[in-house]
Amino acid sequence: MADSTPEDRDEASIPDDTATADAKSSGDQPGSVGAKSSGDEPRSGDEPTSDDDAQVAAAAATALDADSNGQADDAADADDSDSDDADSDDFETHHSPALIATAVALPVVLIVAVLVAAFIALRAPVEREPLALGPVPAPAADGPACQALLPALPAELGDYTKATLVEPAPPATRAWQLPDGGDPITLRCGLDRPLEFNRASPLTVIDGVKWFQVRDEAGKTGTWFAVDRETYIALTVPDGSGTSAVQTVSDTINANLPAREPTPGEL
View 1: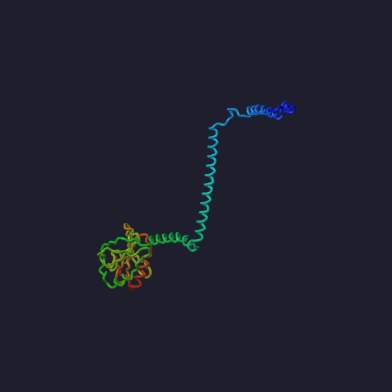
View 2 (view 1 turned 90 degrees about the vertical axis):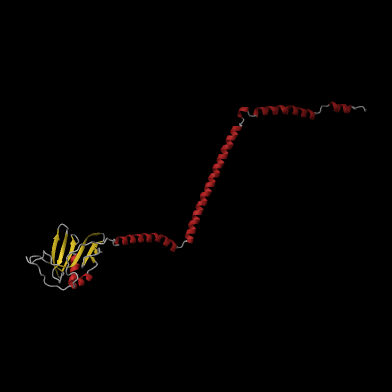
């Protein structure tokens, strides 16, 4: 081994400042870091728990779901609105004005048709039962006067229309009834002179025909006898039927049968 020189001994005796500084620094750092960490670390009472984290996460998830549902509803409403607008546009595009006018007018036409049908039904004559009339002595029923008069009689006398008679019907007889039936107007031709007709009987002239009236208070009817023709003609009308029947039959008699002087009975 070589002997050390004085210079080498001097270098060995001089302390290494760098090593000393490093050691000092190494000794100070752990102490300062440990103190700082001890003061800054949170206490066990302040640390968040797992339950709090779960509640926060659940609230966030609920809010997210609500927001998602709201956005979905808004999107659905927007889709419905767009669909309605599209349907409206399609209707206006694919339906011509003529078709729309027809659709509007059709219900009106149906209502009018129903009203017209109801009106016609009300105006239509009611089918009545055949009318039964009892026989009355009429020796001249088959004579020329009745044969000329009966075909000329009208089918209507005011509101009364010709009635069907139960067979066998009395000869030279006609009848008229209201649409709903009721007491008829009857005409009989070829009768004998009425017993009540005498020289003192008052006569009523209607449209050129001389009539003698006999009242039936019980039956509430009046029977008019034409007394100035070849044969006697009786027209029985219920009370309240008016005078149109007597006037119409008077015109028919005057147009088809010649007049002659009445021949009343004795007093």
